[in-house]
View 1: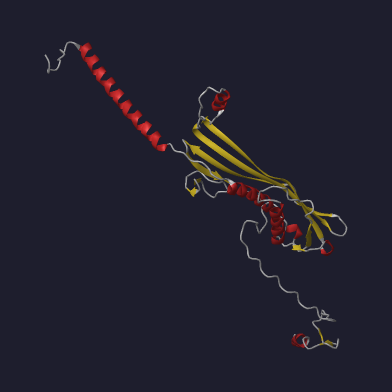
View 2: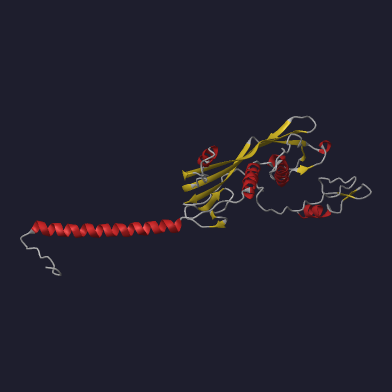
Length: 308
């Protein structure tokens, strides 16, 4: 009858089992719908759009950082105390708009040389050794990877060929993730030779260094920034703290005073005047202005000898 529940006799076990299984399947489908709705809502909340407007500062940072890493790995201490003339005729600035060029490299070499105790002179005639640097590589690369469908205007270009075809808009980018990777490299070497004889004095060997920056987007959210030019990971330029993610320490060989560390140099002591005709005798006798030896300081020594 209508409004009354259907009762199943106890002896009809197959019908009871079928009714229980039908209820379980109905509950399972309801839970799946709920989970699917929650996941879809979460994806809508997580999706977004972000892009890098300008990359000029990042390009200059990775270039200058690679130069600093290469030069600070060179130990100029063998030239300490020597009058050095820096020969720059073989390091020329290329015609480019980048801020990091040969002038930055040469100034960094001079800084590291002076920090190691070398004495810079302006003329080759006044130098004990001639220091000659050379640059093999100074440049940057950029790569981009898209996981999904990149933006394309092929269809719109094809439609433009046909005069009767309606205009077709450009297909937008549909990506799950996107990664942009920028890398700069510097390769240089320095050697020194005697300014008079031309004999070799020292060479640094080839110093190579790389610097990088990574930008990552997930479901359009980003960029998440990391790389050697950042102390910690960043999100759209702001610092973020993520465990187990960060820059690893560098094991570069450095001299005592490194290029990228602050250091206040002590003022060198002024040389003492060299008096004329000043001779120090082994018997502790002093010389007067007349040139005759004086035995005033030797008297205590004679008295000590008499007491013995």
